[in-house]
Image (tube, rainbow, N blue to C red; front, side):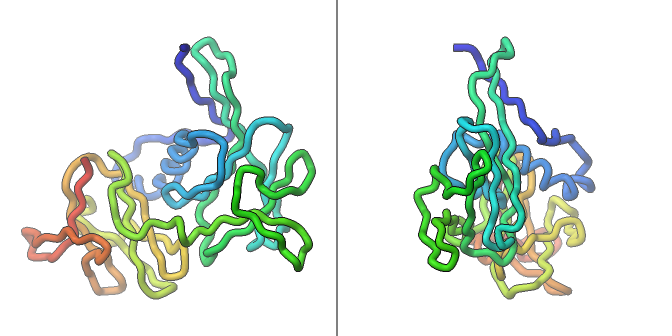
Length: 238
């Protein structure tokens, strides 16, 4: 079997930057990584703060429209091609990847396949909307969200915090020299904040900061006293 190589159209390549610039590039890094790790066409799923939609490449074009935008905007899918080492295309995959929309817990949508509106044939979760008279596909985002801080793989840690809506939640730790101004968690659902951060293997100490108050991560039972006298949460990346 010949080895396969992914070619992405419309995807910006990642660059390696100093720690101070990583925050600005984290989203681009995770976006590219999410696309590269799409296994196959199937039902939508959530990966590292993104909703991933896919479709089989048996048509010319696909778009997607969402209820929270009143179906007024059609977002085009892109194509990911897999080629062998001779450059021969072995598979094509349509995809659309977007950040989890804020304040949305239950996402309804329709696809536009070659100009025709339709429910998502790969998503078994669909329902008939009596008001519009059409069948809609659905993605229950709240049920797919992580509930605790964890190392998601060998290079990523997903920090999460649950609290009141509309706060500014910052992250400080041994990886920032306890500077709370480098990283800010994003509110991806009402009162649910998260940040995926690339960290090399090692053990790290951290706290969340809201205003002038620093506190431990209550989703993470691992904690310790630091040399500076802080009570901090602990995360280990293997």
